[in-house]
Length: 77
Image 1 (cartoon, helix red, strand yellow):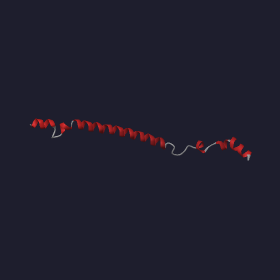
Image 2: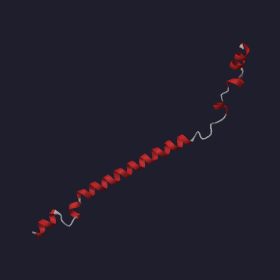
Image 3: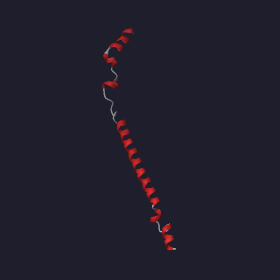
């Protein structure tokens, strides 16, 4: 019993873990997924700010585009 423990502790065959002896399959997938996720978040933020900017511009110049704007109704009087 003691000899078996000594062999397991001191023999290099037992000290090797399977994770170090072979590369894990699909170990790069979480890195790729996180990278893609970050890129998608950046794209979504850019699109969100672009749409928000367009909404603000259209809201500011809505009175110029609309047929019932204040400037036109004042002019019609």
